[in-house]
Structure formats: structure tokens, C-alpha cells
Length: 86
Image (cartoon, rainbow, N blue to C red; front, side, top):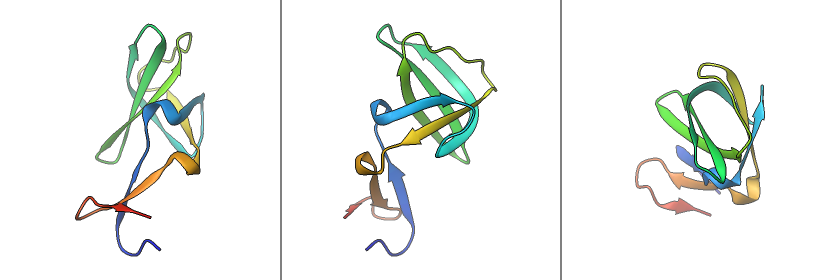
């Protein structure tokens, strides 16, 4: 089990970016057109989180966006040591 403080980790390509709300909802901090995808970043507390959306996806800075996360593709890390938890 994971006792104590943990940090949630996931890859940008494992996020489903959706308008409005998701497992994580925040205002758009930046949007970058990558050619094959659109990378959307949000600020949540002190963390900046990124997700990859389809290349056609567009959203304005400051607009609400949601990230849907697949729990099987998320990882927990010890907040102090950085070691991955099982």
C-alpha cells in the first residue's frame, strides 16, 4: 500500500484532454502545436501538468480544460524519496 505523501505521475500521451472537466480540471496554462498532436498544459497548485490532445484540438489560454486519466497508466512516487510505489 501507499502510506504517506505521494506524487502522481503520468505521461502526457496517456491523458485524454477534454473540454470542461475531467479527473483533473484547471485553466489552460499553455498550448503548443506539435504537428501530430496538441500539447495542453495546466497549472494545478505548484505543478504544471501536460496532456496530448489530437492535432485539431484548440483551446484558449485561461479556459477550463479537463484531463481524464487511465489509472492503469498512472504511477505513484514517494513524495520525499522519489521512489516508485507499487
